[in-house]
Image (tube, rainbow, N blue to C red):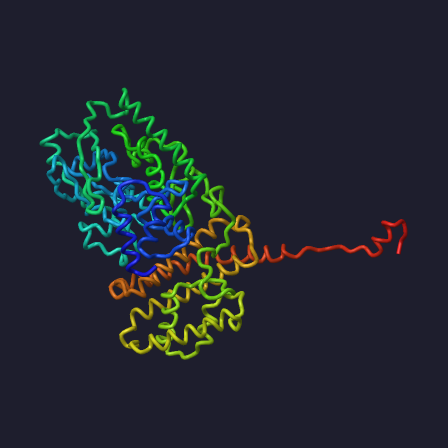
Length: 502
């Protein structure tokens, strides 16, 4: 699919206001002249950031699922004391996850609530962004306009003791609707693309402990959410993020989770959850069973997959791995940056270590790289490439090491469940992070401005790789040894079956 196809498909998805089937999508593609197999369509829909799977080849877009659906926020005492509340992660998964929470627009009775900043202890601030992942919370806080003078890189990514956060002014709600401490805000997204959220006040009426009929319904809501999350762990695993875990559970149970007596995910995690907590998934966090490690493979695996399943194909029948075109181009540019003409050495860098660079894959890759070099070197400027080139070079060195280890794990059909699980998770995450970083380099997306942060990031990933490498290589070696079985041969055994010794 080309870029114009992508635009047409996104237009189709944004126009949907209800659930749709894979056949609906196939029909649209056929009418649009876009050719795709059922497997390609299914994979495309499963991976598309706008789409949530509902099961049985049914899907719904995020705007269709979450526009107009109820969720709630209960501002804390620290927020109310400053006359504001911080959206943080509290609108997850109902709003566009790509929008910074401080840019969301809140309305009451058609009037927009103003913005107001407040000061918070850094630990509390991190809690307000915890569902983005504890590892990413400081970056979300540093991106808040109220912290424009905060330089995380110079502080080694450590937050100061207190930070400023942009929030929503409670003044209008207090004056018009009598909002006070303990009250809850019932929220509905009215414009998903614009990030508009409409709110009404639900008074606590002296009941802050979920008692009475309404309180019992809310307590039942927390119990139901926990059950659905536990079921999702078995069915879908840790998924790509906490946001995705929540989005898929809520999308499949909109009517029961989006009632007016709903609680909030924030309160569920802090006060009501008995079995669900935050767990480490490699270098990231996910929702999971409290006190349990999150494995790389588990009951949610539909079928046995090789480690590099998503990277296969593309370069001939003998191809072991399909490296994206933009990464191959970055390898060529790195060769130009290094002022090298040795394409043979470049092929050896790219072809995974357990495979012969002189084989059919290497020969085909050599021809491809020759053609790309001829095109790319026409416009290449070595002097202008000094900053981007250094980031590219360091990133590709680590990417190559990660790729070779992934390939050695994938060869010969090794069983992933027999490998150290957290190390596998980290290796997979390193690969994904590096691909995204190389893509940023390819698009020259703020590389000059973020040079120091990017170099530190690659250095940190390199440390992570060194931490896991030995354990995974040892597991590869154990699998290799176990492939060989000792067979004991007893001479004359057939003759013995006939009553005679040979």
